[in-house]
Amino acid sequence: MSVSLLTLVTALGWVGAAAGVVAYAMVSRGRWAPTSLPFQLTNLTAASLMCLVAAVNGVWPSAVANIVWMVIGVQAVAMMVRRARRRVVTTARELELAA
Image (cartoon, rainbow, N blue to C red; front, side, top):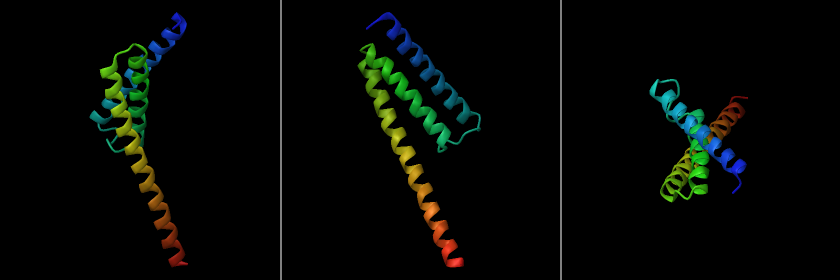
């Protein structure tokens, strides 16, 4: 891998690490709920970027841990999307019944 590409991957890893710290700090300070979309998306981004760095550098335990973290994040976001869709459908039905 070229030095410039490795530098880019390393920089993305730092962005991922910072995103993970920001997400943790926001939840710890009560600004985000652990079930909020911003928290889940920030965690998912952090895990993805740190997985990239770990895989490029052959640090497989960390890469696998971040893949697991990503799977959990994707599942959490998918559940949030499903819940939001259900609310939209329920609201639409209630509006139809009220009309």
